[in-house]
Amino acid sequence: MVSTGVSSLDNLLLSDGDPDRSVILVEGPPGIGKEALCYWFIRSGLVQCDYCFYATHRPVSDVLRDMKGVGISTERVPNWIASSGSSNRLDLRDPTSISVNIKEAAHNNKDRRVRIATDVQRLSLN
Image (cartoon, helix red, strand yellow):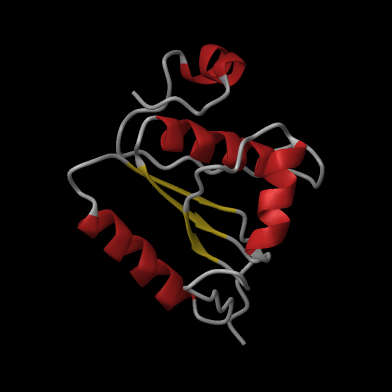
């Protein structure tokens, strides 16, 4: 089992965490803490030396600022696909490239757990 990084959520919803090789979609209205949950999930993975991958429509600097704002150290950071501030620039008009980047990361790190989080709100296919 893999912890979400939020012990009260693990205890309430997931017992001991989510099963390995699972996908969890968190959705809801703005302001309920979806992005903060992503941050804690990634932080938990970094502590456990998992391969952590974060895809965001926001600049990396904004995400790091917000992580610090919820009390998460940014001494260790995930691998990024982002709108700016990362080696892999996110193009929301190309969901295939996002998928390929995530698949390659998982394949290249198959000897350890891979955590993937994203705060991409919508993909524009125009």
